[in-house]
Amino acid sequence: MKICHIVDNARPGVGVTQVVYDLMTADGVECRGIFTGGSDLDARFSGLVSQGTITLAASPAELARALSSLKQDGFRLLHVHSRKSAWLCMLARLSGFRIVRTQHFGTAARDRPKRPQALTRLRNVLTGKSWWIDRWAAVSRTSKCYIQSRWGVPDARISIVWNGIDVDKFTPCPAGRRAALRQQLGLEDGWIVLISVGSLVARKRHGCIIKAFADIPDRPGNARLVILGEGSERPRLEQLAADCGLDGKVILPGRRDDVAAWAAVSDIYVHAALDEAFGLAVAEAMACGTPAIAAGTMGPAEIVEDGENGLLVADGSPAGLSAAMARLIADGALRARLGQTARRHAVQRYSLTAMCQGYAALYQSVLPAPGAAHG
Figure 1: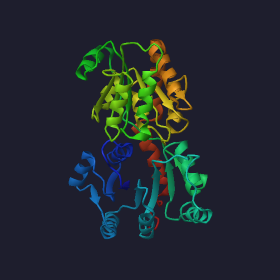
Figure 2: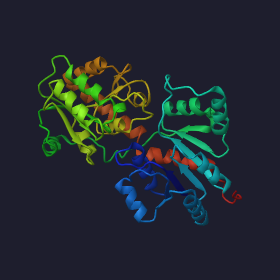
Figure 3: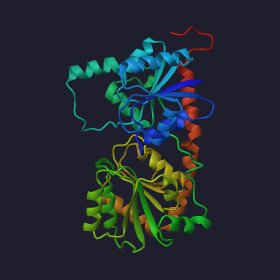
């Protein structure tokens, strides 16, 4: 099977970057890529560019040449991950390609600004009933609702394929290695470590996590909060931690390539973002056997089952997060039970194998039957 992935965002530390890379390097599929964006490239994608696996197409002319080359090499299916791809899809469809489009971002927020009704109807006619996309893929039920509410795409044209993670990389730390690995990371063995992973930007609500951590009733002196990531919010978060009297209690190591190790030796994962379609970092922590606290009712809340593999804070409030943190800090047996279930659910539902199998079935459903004439 030959698949070409169209991407306009492959920045380091972005969830979609990891997902596309995993799909492009999956066994049993011959993959190419076309990068149409102008952002920085993750080092792994730069390597694929050097190998000739990914073509950079910054202009319509370069894109047309890339599509022509793909067709000559026998590629007939494009997997589009770009949010700015309508004209690209139309060009490719007219050239005889079949199109699968994954919606990685977006939630059906109630306070989304409304467009004028006439423009909304036109948008839905052009996109929801579009002939240039054979099948839409949603990464969660939240993502599917977004596709339906934003573009009016019929239910029958959308498949849900959960994002996948490497459950062999993100795995529980053996008890005999925990103390040594913690020492390597600068964490003391006796600490109760809460961790959050994500870019230091406002929508991730790391400030809310810091406030909730500061307000934990009778917070034990051995509790520490680690926030992995980098971004424009760092100065504000550092000042907030200081203002809350948390010097030395909140650790900001920056963006790290060894997230799996940090998650595996942590005790509790905390995710406060309210508007995410999936929550890759939540699934990764769960695969490490770390129980998660998730805020809101959208993507991460589909992964975390309250009282089964973690705790949910539906309103996302600092008080709710604080209460959930306090509950898990105080109850080691509960952490262990939730963590065991979290690992099992991650392996069963969110493995790379499950994701790749889901997309393989989706590809087969839109590709012409063997021997059929191509458009």
